[in-house]
Image (cartoon, helix red, strand yellow):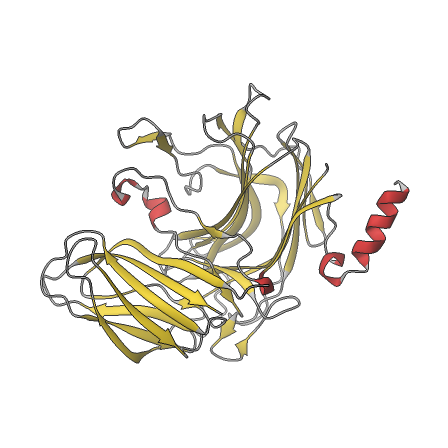
Length: 294
Length: 111
């Protein structure tokens, strides 16, 4: 640790907004949804000529919202330190998914760190605990090397907490190495599509079982901390932590597909929710901090 | 900081028949809204008016009182201004047999 590191840490620890994160030296964004949408939007699928060309996986997506986590039985829950969180809500159909995404590019291929405070719950439409109604909560990067850095791939690290499947409470982190076949869109030869959040091809993260706090009724939630470290130079994950658990990433890998002609230095980050019943799944982000070593 | 101002697409290329509605949208931070509805394809049959609905919990809905026409032709647009709507908001319509419209529904929200 240099004197600069010590000084930087002292300043950050004195700031309540930053003190609950452990960012790398450069903060790329600190998104507290008490300040608004902070550049998070919906993941729309590719199309040409007609929206009918959009894959169904994307067509189901809708806009994230600023939520106070209101509940019919006790009112607004609020965030970690304010009134609002970003809410990602699925439709009420088994297997439905929704995604919120932020689209950036990177300026140095080196270590980056994603930190977030998150929670999830089903729509409280029954007077039951409903702990197996959410299938998963997860996040991903969509990355590609710089135009002169190649050869290289488009790389998409995915992690999800598989909470339940077909009514069974599983509670395990999973990753993905495969996407759906790449399909051309339209006739201009400029656009392709694939659905990387398809329900197939998820693999168990070794040692990735984790029992998260989910409380006693379907309207209560508790906030969780996650941190995911990734090296944009090696295009490898280096560390993954959720609350008190740090998971070995030796067995982790990413979706890797050929680099595309229009995505150089892409740094997209996304969070998603998936329901396991005909009931809406809600994922909430209180805040997200993305930082880098540059 | 400028007040929050959001364009939220809440239904895109959705075919409405029978009882149809947008997904619940939380907008308690917004003091005003305009709902735009555009027909993406030529509608079929006799179109009813659309109505604004509000809710305490996103599950139990009340008609807010505002009604406005659904767009009668492809690419036609209709809208409804709103204020004082609480938190949960949606657009709903009950289409008679044989009526169908493919909609793009957008909320324009301002704090």
